[in-house]
Length: 333
Ligand code: NAD
Image 1 (cartoon, rainbow, N blue to C red):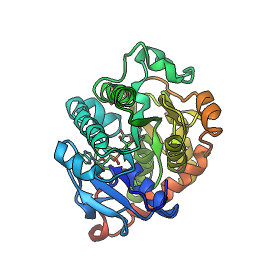
Image 2 (tube, rainbow, N blue to C red):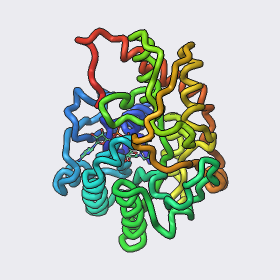
Image 3 (cartoon, rainbow, N blue to C red):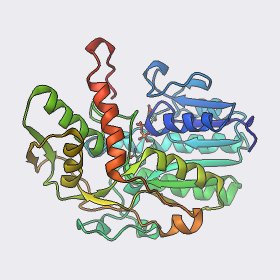
Image 4 (cartoon, rainbow, N blue to C red):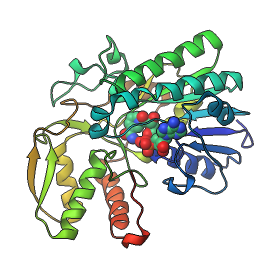
């Protein structure tokens, strides 16, 4: 890749896409087309210097416009959110199949060289995630298929389509399976937020309001691993540059319970709060972590940011946002 080749990032107004555009700019890429359906003044990081375009990528002509002249395409656009969102919006999640389908077709027409698809740990089979002390998920655990209903099926289908565009049409596709990515400049309120940001928000809101209690979804003993955004971006770009043609986990293997995640946030905030467990709230699978043997073998690297360190940065950003005066505050939904 020359620094003058055109790189396209879809979902650039979102959390990971915004960080990816910023990283590509820092790396010296001079022609970046950044695309999202949201109005540009609502992007988490609307970066001047990129060719920022507002397009609905469910539409085929919009994908053609987005992909025209591209050498590499990172497709991160998707209608998604945390467990609260994906359990209640299965059809909307599945409609993102239009984005990946039309982007792949447009990438082929544009004779792009490489295409990245942001997949998810939600592709993994549910019966391998029934216990909190889960065995970390290897890439082969996605089959026999029984992914998360709605969102996970869309991602698994998208992965499969990437594979066949490569096999049948010669488009080099790369597939990263992201595991719970967190960090600054992402959603922390409005219904699409995920556990790390939601817990920061709840703790900060309790502190600001003088409350001594927060609500936790489930019994707090479900386990997850959480991937800091810098690791996610590094892994994404390294995978894109690699020869790895099969889906690859991009995820931390530092397994914690949600209660331990709350402990970390309380320690950062310097408070102890009572916990009210809502057992009827969406909880997702009982346990999930990333097996990183394959990424170590293929990229010689694996996510390494300690959860405590990444959460301190995330907390600081959300705290700053929540303390802005009402007229300066944007609702990140
Ligand atoms: P995000 O919601 O912040 O970003 C996605 C962006 O896509 C949003 O800005 C949204 O406006 C845009 N979008 C949605 N529909 C669109 C359309 N029709 N046309 C154009 N743009 C559209 O989410 P994120 O956390 O940045 O996730 C990026 C990608 O990574 C997604 O594909 C997501 O499924 C995947 N992923 C994320 C995580 C995570 O933990 N954040 C985990 C697994 C997979």
